[in-house]
Length: 252
Image (cartoon, one colour):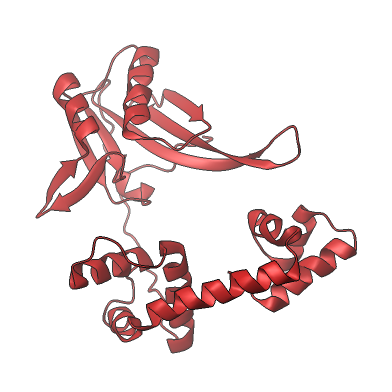
């Protein structure tokens, strides 16, 4: 949530004739953020800001716990702390959104000067795998311009063969569900002319719902597909492509 100063600067840029892209670049903002507040009248912004501050007050009761987590484990993410709060209090959901919580944790880091540590990795060459042994799957999303001049988010499924680097990519307008995730596999195997013995994935909610003492618990839909098709699965840390032993698949 932006503050009054940024809102005022967006309106100033609009009056000066700058477009949304130019404004976003000038203020170092996401274009979608600029678009959200571009035509918003001041009274509506005031209401939205007040509502945001009310949501933050709900997080304040966990401030000491958040500070303690970040102090003891400075590399923890906001999502991990969010889940810890739920588990600690035996709650299925919290009365504030993850996005608002992420912004709150960011401000806590700044207030207490708790920076995430920078880890350096040790790299070594990975032995080349034989044909048909392994494929790697990645998911992504980007914004593209439409014919109306607005931006639209589209979603991507990509599978690449480890040996040949032969790729299959599927784009769609809606977020992937377990059902469309399975359909993407079927289309990929048809396109590639077969399936590998093993597929490497990031941990994703459409693939796995949780990890129990080292055992991955898959979603019902994906578990049913695995039982039918029978290939091996290797899960890596989410949003960490280097743990797969290769760079991001997209646009190579």
